[in-house]
Image (cartoon, rainbow, N blue to C red; front, side, top):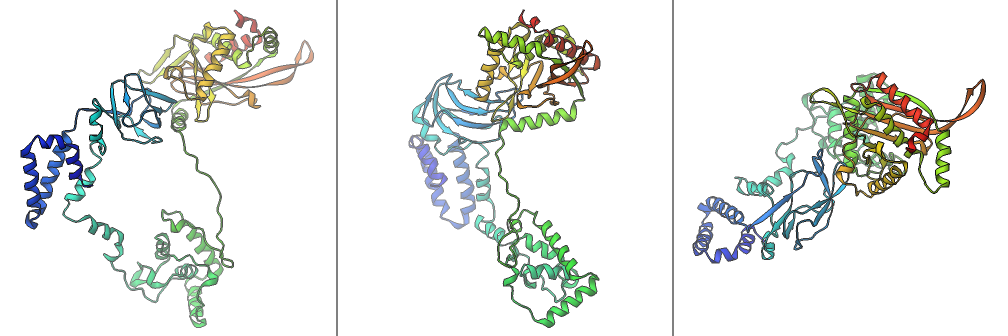
Length: 525
């Protein structure tokens, strides 16, 4: 249906109440029959359509929200409403995938869903992009059946008002070669160009020459291959050429290059591989075999769609490595006492993990060394001490790595930390975390000990200034009281912002941490 027809259907009641408008439309239709006034009438129709669409019933356009402070774009994971649905304040409109997690988008107004402007699964939508049209009356829903936000239909209007018809422009774009006729190719063909032409069954008239006096060069052949001119036929099916012509070309090849034909063949193959990196689909097809006509198979791979979280993680970690001067300090802690206490608590019905002890020990170490619980303020270019000791714990999910936060970890018992970490990790893997549960934090912990990793270095997670990488427990033979004994030790490595942490601060923190791990009774109080 034409644009005028849609406008008439949408504004039927208004037009019936305005006879002058109906008369104006009739006059325009009569004028449009005159060839002399066709262009003027087209412009008048366009202006009238704009006025009709500008007088839409009262409505509200809901745009992509910024559900986190660092969010610049998001994905519509799924819609929780459909067109025509009545909604009230507090209803969930959609699940939006942000740079941190998938969060529910709550509605703030009452009304009816007239139009969903983006389908489920839409990706990389900038913040502020219109997503939903909300109307107050149910009767107005049909008025927005073909509604488009401003700026989406300007291209069609512009093409309709241009002096050149669209069909003519499309035909010229589809046949660009007709506008610029090719030069007539001469019988002079470079040796490398000839080898490529024979290999891909090209004729001189298939190639636009650019060399002096119409000579076909190797670059002309590569350009023809990149544009899809090549027939890609196996050489076994090529038409045999006459012997005198082959000898003449071979003699010309040896005379002009001074190299054996086999070397020229290898060189031309390398140039052909370079031409395959172009955007043309034909140039990306593998060569067919000469004997059996089978295609050479390249390396096999599978494209995996990248989640919004992984994109932001990649961006932030790259910025971290490029902009933060990192300091790395390692230490080993004896965990025999922790293992014994953990077994004792287990016998009493309390299940806690080694990671729970690590979180508690790190929180107490930050309390003992407050200068380690700090961040770098880029605006004022100075150290900013953080009041609360909020420990962020790295959790691997299908969508990417996320760091839920255990707030005020220094004030919580081992049992409380254990229960809270399990609950946060479960909701993190289900993408159900709220923004305040993963944004912020003053210190991060990443533990790969359960995967058999004995030591590693983690990347700082801005705006935090430090992250501690925890390795697995390993038995070592050490000397104690002049005798060799077996000790179970755990290696931890600090990755710290050297603008906040110097060697002294990092050493003090690790010293307190190792003391607490070696004497875990302190963590019970």
